[in-house]
Length: 186
Image 1 (spheres, one colour):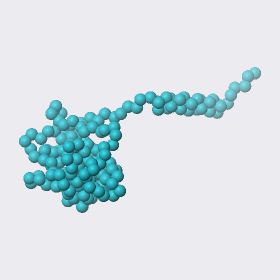
Image 2: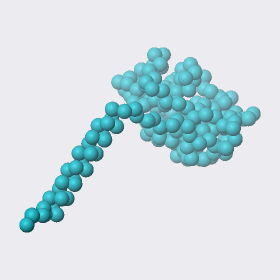
Image 3: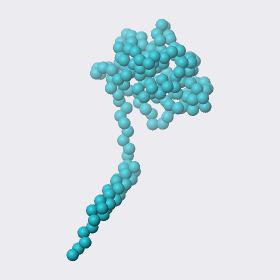
Image 4: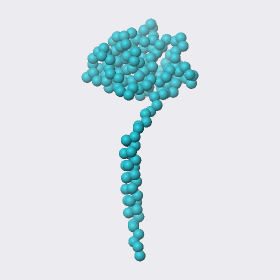
């Protein structure tokens, strides 16, 4: 009569085999191409005129040289990009933004006030609002739309909101306490 292996032996054998198969697949997957997340975000309206989402660059953008020193928020108008820079002058985070129709003048500012949530001048619910400048009677502030949308092009409206993705808005909110320096460069 033949001996039949105990059920524990079968379970152990199957488990070892499954772990080996998963390990082989993981090694193969690691050597292959890696997909990247799409950078598109939903727009505030379904119209074709909505602003495209800012794109993330492959390499981190370098903090502009003319942006001062120390802990600060740097906003480059031409690059449509913000940096959160720590006291050692290292960029802790950088991200693309959607500027409003009214841009601040080049110079140094300070975060003057903060509001957790409100409705933007475009009618979109926004949060993490960090005010730092005013121009022609328009308040200029960083914020993000609660629903993650980008602002549609303003038709004849003057808007001072500098919008960003929700995760970037949360990071700027945590970094940009009242009094924090904001440097605007070209």
